[in-house]
Image (tube, rainbow, N blue to C red; front, side, top):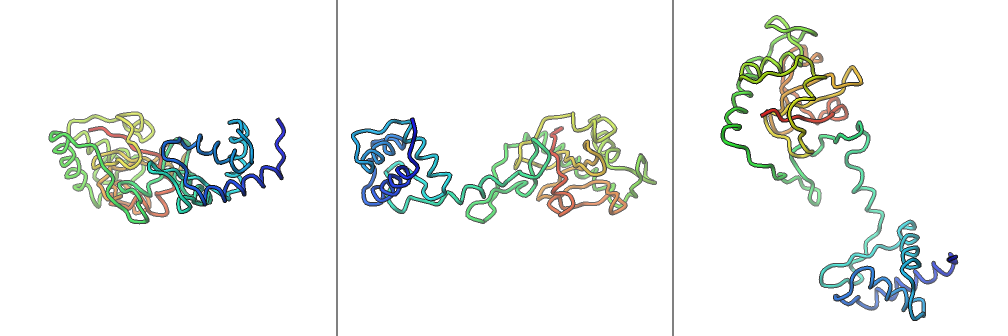
Length: 249
């Protein structure tokens, strides 16, 4: 079937006017209402679903009209420009495949205001373990950074994480590249204290790791700071390099 673009444009204009002047019955589904409105606007007895779908596709591509159907019906105030759609799709772009950014580590945006995102409850035993992990990790603050180091005179990021967990009877592999394969994946927005957070820094594979402390902060052995320190994961440096997180406890 060939659809005349001029006819489609004319019919869509009539459809828009018809939708503004007359409410769609609440009992009809969104697509059935579209068929009825198209038929009425086109002056025909019926329009096939294929034609209606093509007209809707052209309408969306032109970004001139979007139908919003609520449970109680729609009116002229229910129409919104499809130009708002790209903004809803931007989150997560520009990072390595299958990973998400850290802009909303523990928050969700609602009308521009951050609100706490719900997190699964933590078992009392796990909560106690996490507190011990944090307490152990903070004892390393100020320890000098040394690539390949494993002691008080110098320590690197993965050795720091390994030693903190080992002190709490949890054994981890030596490198960040290996540690990212341990534990369970943490969905975006569900980070909590004690999770391991990974970054892509000097290599294509996971090359940096820290321990999440909450509020977008992590404790880690930083080569940039030259010591074990606490950093903001949403900084201009760490945010674009974030790969994901693993839950060990």
